[in-house]
Length: 263
Image (cartoon, rainbow, N blue to C red; front, side, top):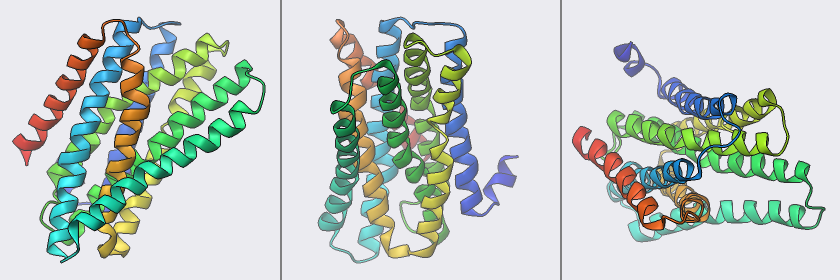
């Protein structure tokens, strides 16, 4: 099976990888069938762990290969990487502000909280799928820093952090009064954008080689924005902040070991 996947077109590889990451979101959403509330310590620990994984993946699987590629393509490395990284975060910042604008200017009803929660997580899943797609698509050119191991590890890391994200959507929706089935449906729906953006990322890379370093750093910036704006603040709302910080270090360490050990 693995040999079959390795021999596939990068676009199909990206599709399979992002279907995997979406499936993990689905598994996380399934907790709503068993719990109306998830213990806060457990939830915050998972979010902190996910933050560590995403930080490590952003550097080892995105920024580091982007720097290598930019060097090989004779680009002005600091300029390209910095612009891509900043614009990735800026895009999500603008998206958040748009949602906040419509949210803050209307009644703070349960229905609007539900819409905000779904839209927020869905928006943040787009760069994750894009990152996986770009990672697989970049293998096509055999550029230093782009490898199947890096792409698989990135998909694996994003998949791991998708589990608490799925739970973070479905369980709060259940608390807001939605049925178990609807909460599960919207939880798994929030991750369906990953296969779509994954295929898009692979297609963009296959068509335009010169944007590879920019796309990788762009995806890294978007992922770091999610970590800083969503995951870390959520985990640090816990009374045991120091313990939650250790979970983030564990997540980073796991992803770092996997990436270095298999590179």
